[in-house]
Image (cartoon, rainbow, N blue to C red; front, side, top):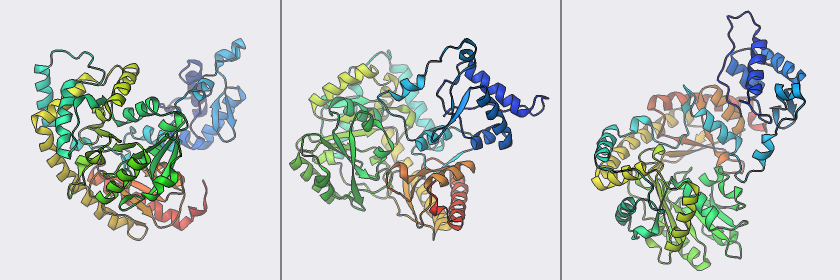
Length: 491
């Protein structure tokens, strides 16, 4: 979707529709908007331009008459020509054909919209999975950055596996989770997503099967599918993955891998029990199924420490373990780590060098200094207390506004409350109605391709005042939707 950051001037004598025509023609003719690009809907353009919808229709009709845009069934209005090509009779290069032939597939439309709206001023973000700016440790980071500025000699490229200093630090740090691993078996990555990309590129063949929890964060990504992998769902209950479904969904060759977030699962917040973890390790070891354990939320426990990681009981090198600082400190730090067999780490580090020649040296130094100084552990204690206040306040807000229209469980860590609506309605329609009211939600159908009736509510990002206002408006939209019976709309 094209970004539009312009409004017609209502003080000019030029008709509003003509100003819109001139603006769109300029964006097309200058190459800012490419042939094949899709325009926002009439309704969205009306809101962006702050004009009546009839004004937008009049402008679009003129552009269609000039052969610049065209309405396509099931796609919307797209740019089909540019003014230069009309004058010279030269057929424009169709970049859209190149885009569509690319290996990496685009995000789901809803996720693309979420990524755009997250940066819109005034939007209350009820589903964002990162820490609020209010929780950013300004004083601690000032100390760390000042110390680094005095001690760091240069910021050149690091070793293929990442900074030895940081890998040694993480090796020591993981011991408190009963994970004993040498620095040579650790790869520093630019967040967990890059680790997953490296795994899909480096150790899986096209047609491999990835077993994912239902619902799962991974379902919102096209990462594995872009490389020709198949996602098979395994159900979860309040204890974690239903282990009998692992064997049922396993392929009979060496091309099956299990991806799991056993601790404060995204999006449900479920913590897999220790008994279930042991069962999974035993089954996967016997069936020779590698495991990717994503442990992004481990440090964010609020009531009691969760069971030890799967990796802590891995005797056969069966588990590849992902950790990150994105959830506990700042998403923009972009530092994570992958722990695995040394030959796998060697191979993936080579691929990473081909990809970006290394994670930011500055970010690696920051994380190493944070952990080495002991400030990170002190900060986590404060963060847990502040997140606990936010969680409890959000649960109280939900009780006020959602009692009778939804159910939920109390999470014991992480960022999320998995809200289940009591009556069926179109989540796509609710998503649209919400963002028109300045409320951004994460509908459950981006984590579960079935007819989910869930919403992922985050208590980590929006302020308590925003959570109160946003959830109140959302509850009113849901009640109105029930009343108007949009449950029968396929939308």
